[in-house]
Amino acid sequence: MSQDPHNGKGTFEVHKQPQPGLKVFRKGKYIDPKTFQMSPALIRARRPFFVRNMLALAGLTGFVAGIYGYTMYSLRTDDFGDVPIPPLDPEEIKKLQSKYSDDSKA
Amino acid sequence: MFSTRICPRVSVRAAGLVCASRPLAGAVQQQRGMLKFLKQTIGLDDSGNENDPTPENRFHLWDQSPNQDIRERAAVIRARSKCPVTGEDVRYVCPKSGIPTHHSREAYESDATFQEQNKAEKLFMANIYEHDLRSGRDFPEFDLPGAQDKDDTVNFMNWDLFLYTRDFYSMDTEFQMAAVTKMLSYPVTIGSVLHTMSPYALKPNGPLTLEGLKSLAALRYSLFPIDKSRALNDRPIRLFILGARAESQLPPHVWKQLSYLIPTAKWELYFIGPEAYYDRDKHQYVQHSRPVEMKIDDTMTFKFYSDYFHVLHEAHDFFPYDPYLDAFFLFHPGLGAPEAMDQWAKSLPGLLESKCAIFSTGFHKDDLERDWNWLMDKFGSKLDVLLEPSENIFGSTKWELNDLNSTEVYQFNQQMFAFRGKRYHAIPQ
Image (cartoon, rainbow over all chains, first blue to last red; front, side, top):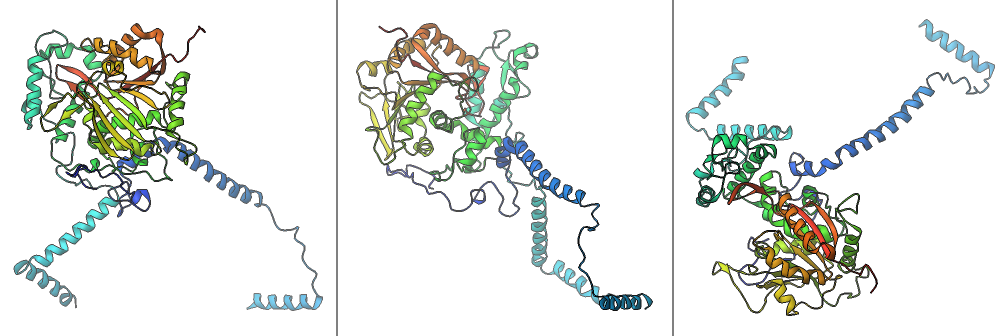
């Protein structure tokens, strides 16, 4: 944009197109493109939403962590005794027994 | 082994010191750049431009200011201001703000209202903002944004959110805010009231009365047409700005911000008052018998009428009024001010007769209260209140002081109320 809106000819430049791209990354703007730091202006603009955003964050993470924790808690004493073991051939059992007794000797 | 490894380094460094310091300087610079990057990343970098404004480097005693016009203002205060305690001339300079305020140190210390309302702090801010404007620093914040993206909504909750959602330059310091909000206050105050996203809630949650909602709904019906393909309005929205002085001298691209806020409307701004038209070549206010017209672009036109409203109203210059298409704005009119009330007493019957919404702002609470009391006293039975007296969210953040009474601090458009002539007869006739 030219600094003088009148540009000496009596015409007036008004139709300025918005810059492309994500708003916060635009030039001279609210996030430092190198360090990704928020500018003080952006921090001020976000302040009214900070507490409610943090509460929502705590609620959502709490919900997820709760489901995980409850699952772990309820499976704590499970010994999988209710899982049926398929019947085995006596020959097969002998083979396995001999194999594992050999292993323990070695 | 050890010595062979260390030796070349030593010799290079020695050679660098002796013959050419350039490669070494380059290395040091790189290191500094690295350090600066690290500092920036963890937010410790406080090095900036030397002329960046801080309260310390913008503070000067007004009598010894580096700027001629501020020294002149200090002289005016000393010549014409009166001490609020003793009523004698001003001789004592408030140590906190650097501005002459009282007759003596005793008077300064015994002024309870001065201490209570923390006026020294506000005078201090007035001092540093005035010096900042004259500091000659860069003002990137004056590069105002253009049209709003269709997908982006503007938030009118406060200045910070407004500037962010409107994609202004990131205003990181109070100095930038003060410089910009002072001029943006006029168009944005209008926009914030008329916009559907207005922050002024209906009573009891806000200052807006039911009658106010009726008036605003009528205006919004024209400003935000639901069927955009149809030309609902056969004429533009007319905003009458009465007693115009500073507002008529604002550059057009500042007023254009209003039409970016409400792009569906066409605007005609009528600046009315003896000081409405300032001739920049002659450096004085000029009277014209015919209105001066200034077309900005397809959607905005300025008209300057250098006469009082009641004269033009009686000449039927603006007939017919339409509450759906017209609104009045009085920026610090001083309705109750002794020097202006006679003229306003003549203008107000015409304003009320138009049945259009009338918005009025004030410099500070006492100023607005004086206007409000005068209005209620004289025309209370003939008007409906639209907005109860309340703080204007989009008032200027720049503190100012009155040279004729240096302890009076104010901000432009700080307070606001609105009224309208009674729309219907209370009793059927």
